[in-house]
Amino acid sequence: MTTDLPARMLRLLSLLQTRREWSGAELAERLGVTTRTIRRDIDRLRDLGYPVEGTTGHAGGYRLASGTAMPPLILDDDEAIAIVVALRTAAGHLTAMEETSLRALAKLEQVLPARLRTQVAALQRTTATIGWETRGPRVDPELLGALAAACRDHETVTFDYTTRRGTSTARRAEPHHLVASGGLWYLLAHDTDRNDWRIYRLDRITHPATTRHRFSPRPVPGGDPAAYVADRIATAPARYRATANVHAPAETVRHRTGALPARIHPLDDATCTVDFATDHLPGIAQALAALDTDYTLDADPHVTTYLRQTVERARHALDGEPAPGNGTNPVPAQAVN
Image 1 (tube, rainbow, N blue to C red):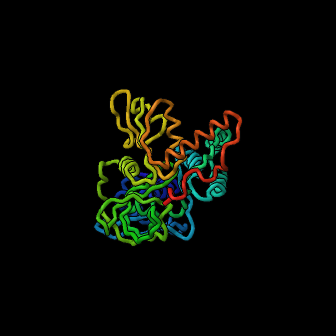
Image 2: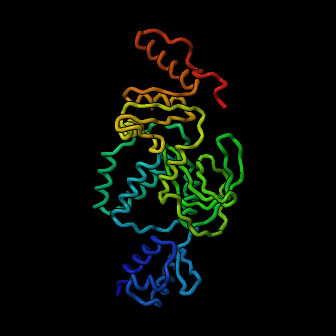
Image 3: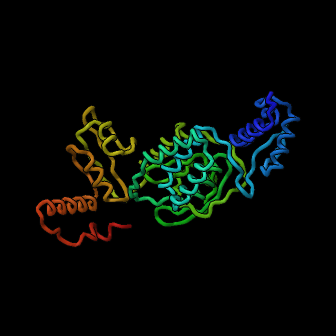
């Protein structure tokens, strides 16, 4: 039995922060006290400003609700270090998060125990982030947080979605997982109106809203959300078509190009075909250059035109000659839909 009241209160608060809902009996068993003691401790937390809600049901329970201000968090050593690392590395994928991350780091460091402050200082001194430019827009953290909560709580959401063709439609979906790939974030959800699984790019979602309607999670096809999203991305329509027959093993090509597994098809132990279809012409050129081996190419005229112009610019640069034209229109205007 936990007789130290401050220690028991901290432990109770920590438990409430790790799960959406606890029954009184579960909390009592974890802390080695009676359910009556749990009720008194819950009242003490409420007096301290923690918004603990009681839930109805067969046994009743408790959950830590959102309040007007964020209460203090109880973190163990590993959790504190993990947050520091996440703040250092994840901000580059979100809109306008650099300054916010620094403020959060400063607050966290101020209250860390000395033993952890030393480790955090070492991390700060010895780690750095390279901010590669990506084609995809960064995600609004408020949207990311709202969808993550809906996935966690199994709550149906509505939003407007703009397709790759620029049309916007209202959607109602059961969100299951968030998946990051290639600088973009995707929502894997079951569309209730279409009764089918759908992949939504977060940068194309606007006006999200929760419905307070809970759903029972469905099994993701294949059982692996990341693999399912990767397969759907690989087979999605693209503006430019390009397929290469490569004189290298499939696994070697995958490591060199970072291509999705679903886009690489082994022909034998030494050759494979790779689908480089995309909406981004420079991406095709970069992927082909990364092959570093012989290949034959079957591609759209716009792709071959762009590649020839790229090679011509490189030849002129090697010969010390100015490249023809100003390079501002690498493909015919009609190539862009």
